[in-house]
Length: 321
Image (cartoon, rainbow, N blue to C red; front, side, top):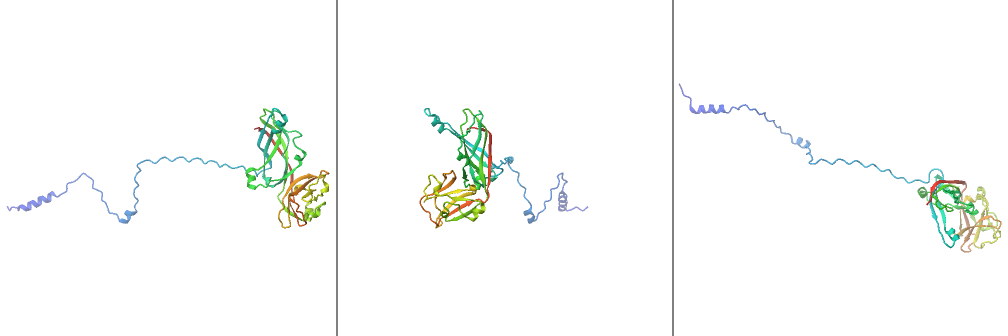
C-alpha cells in the first residue's frame, strides 16, 4: 500500500477545523451606509430635559375699566354735589354769631343741554326740611333781586362740562342741632338756552342818546334797546364816561356787549345794574376815562332764538356734613 505524504494530511485536518460551528446568538443587524444629504436633513432627537418645567400660572382676570361719568348726557337735572356748615358762637354777641354762621350747598347741573346754557338765574330753594322737621328756608332768605337777576353763563370748554358738569352755589339756613340729613329739598332755577349767536354792529351809538337804537336786524329779531338819558335817573352816573342801555324786549337774547374806538380797539368798561327813577332796570357801562366820539362802535352778541325754562330741583334724604 502506498503511503500518503505527511504534509497532505496536515492540510486536510486544517480545512476540517475551519468549518464554523453553529451559534445560539442571533445574527447582528446589517448597517447600511446613508447618503450624506439624507444624514443632514434627518431631524435629531431632542434630549430629555433634566428637570420638569414649572406648571403654567393661571392668567389674572382683567380688571374692568373704570369709566368717568359723562355729565353732558341725558335730561337736565341738578344734584347736590357738596355742603358746608359753619357755626360760630360769640359769648357777648348773638347777632355776630348769627352773621358768621351759615350753611351753603353746591349743586351739579348736568344733562345734554348744559352746553347750550347761555344765561341762568340763582338757585331759589322753596322748601328745605331736615329730619327733625326744621325748615331751612324762610321768606327773607332771598331778595327780589336774587329771584329775578340773570347772569351770563361761564364760557366752559365742552370737555370740562362733560367731566365736571355745571356747578352752582345755593344757600339755605342752618339745620337744627342734631339733624342728620336733609329730609326734603325743593327749588327751581331759571335757564336760558340757545345754540346760535350772531353779532350786530351799531355805528356811532351816541346818536341814539335818549331814544331807541334803530337797526334793521334788531327790528327783525324783535329786540328793542333804548339808550337812556341821564335825566331818567335821580342820581345819574357821569354822562361823559357812562353809557346806559335798557333792554325793553327780549333782554335774555343779548349775550354780551362790547365797545370799540375809531381804531377798532376794544374799550375797557365795567358793567353794573342800575334803575331809573321810575324803577326800570338798566345796564350801565362805565369807562375809565372820557373817550366818547362819533367813531365809537357798539357790538351786540345776540341769540336769534332762545329757550327759557324753569328747571325744578328736588332731593331727599341727603346726609348733612
